[in-house]
Length: 233
Figure 1 (cartoon, one colour):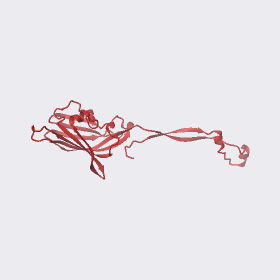
Figure 2: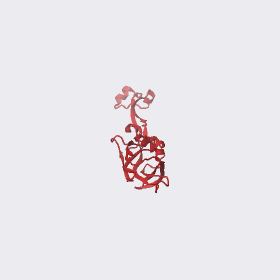
Figure 3: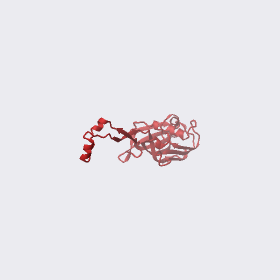
């Protein structure tokens, strides 16, 4: 069982079960001496009370979440972005969820002219192998419509109408909503790569598809008790 796997909460109760006379008659009292047997007779029985421990299984409310660790910025284009940082941290040992923050300073307007390609790699045989899971978005469409990556960015603070003007943007405490994680996700542990690129209309700029940034972060699908997390994902 994994470290943060959801466990069932087990509680016990004591149930006093008193046997009736017929049930007690099946268990004759064992006398230590013959005098005790003659005094009470061979038909002597005892009605005894038995204490039995009955385990009651109370299922806890589990939640599935995406744990993300070890973020990295492999590349960014300084002609369009002054700086970019990807941070992942959690706020205490009692809360197993890691929250992601994205800090960047854009030099140009950005919106649907930015394409984001997500590639999911599965951790298999001690290495990351590319899987069939991929997601491709225009930036505005992702932020306003997508429940997997767009909803965390909206909660992080990117709520203004698209396109967004140049300036500094700080998106804090982002995490994928639990209801957006498919129940039959093909693997549990892997790595996510995000490729951001500019798409210019042909003819206006000598080149198209300029790469903006290349990010990565490790992921793992986990489960935990809602009471342990303490917040709604």
